[in-house]
Image (cartoon, rainbow, N blue to C red; front, side, top):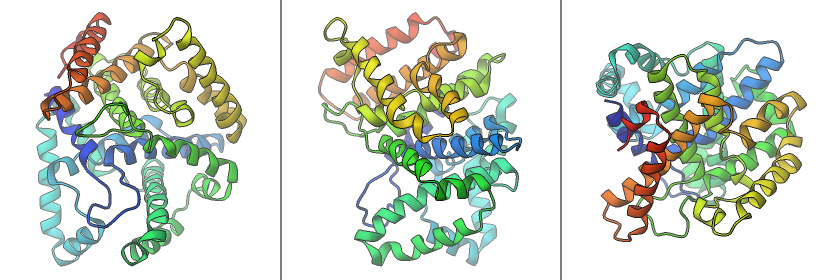
Amino acid sequence: MIKDLIDLATVMFSMRRWNNRPTFESISEASNSGFILHVAHLMGMIEISNGKKVDMSKVITRIILKDMPKCIISDISLSTKRMIQTLSPSAWNRMYKSSIDEVLKNVPDEFKAQFEDAMINSRDESIEGKIVNAADLYAAFKEAETNVRFFPEYFKEPFESIKKAMQQIDLKSFHKILEDEKLKNYLTQIAALMYAVRWNQHPRTVPTTVAGHTFFVTFTSYLIALEMQKIDMVNVLERSIFHDVPEALTGDIISPTKRRVEGFETVVEEVESKMVNEILLPLLPTEIARYYSPLMLKPFDGGMEGKIARASDLMGSLVECKMEIVNGMQTDFFRRSYESIKQQIKSMNLEVVNQMIV
């Protein structure tokens, strides 16, 4: 079952946003979700600092599960969806419910209710639902804002529609992000993860980005933590979300390069720490920066939670190698990498993770 869920989630890597329009930037659904995780988490932290109670686990879970039905029914454009809902809302509801039911076939019975709630109620009127909706709109706005400059005839209508929807958001955190230059700059830096291509020195059949990898690692961490229980779910998910943030500044430096000569990996870690502390963290409120620092710089420390995040990181790399092998990439690089990563996972002695190996 869990293996099938992991396979299903990989569809997010190949689904392109705005796929019925010419785009200046080609962004996958996985990359979009990876960026939304960061926007929503920052909003949640701001709301908490203002005295609001936010269930961060619920926010994160809704983001990583809300688009799973798309993996069944494919990506239907917003304008088409709206027209279908206008002409026959019952037909849309039946079709969408059928896609949810298809996803749930792969979910263990004890977790079905959680998955179903996250997919159906991701953008409800709770503060968590409002945060997910606002973060989703922010990411769509940034995409449309770029594309409308190059293809106004295709993007003017959705761009104006998104702006109008954003005006209806009643969260202080959302408007603070829109108005605060430092916070906007922070999210601009984070958005670079959507363009940082992984395994960039090798041809790929399905290119993946660091942001897309972030989505998949967070999704996998959630599955592992559910199975293991007695785990700090929020801590696991947060470590997964932030584990590759330094790469927004350094780019994706693969492990073989880091370990090519003795001592180089340590230098890279020092550079990452320096850049995060000097460029990213000063853009955030002090308390939030203090909270984010260890998540960005020491994500795999901290006992079992860090171990799960690391195992999920390796699973993300394993799945990317498997996609290339299955898609017929002839180079031996991905086969060798697959076997090497699989052995690293097995050496961690996490039975739940071993059962997920694809």
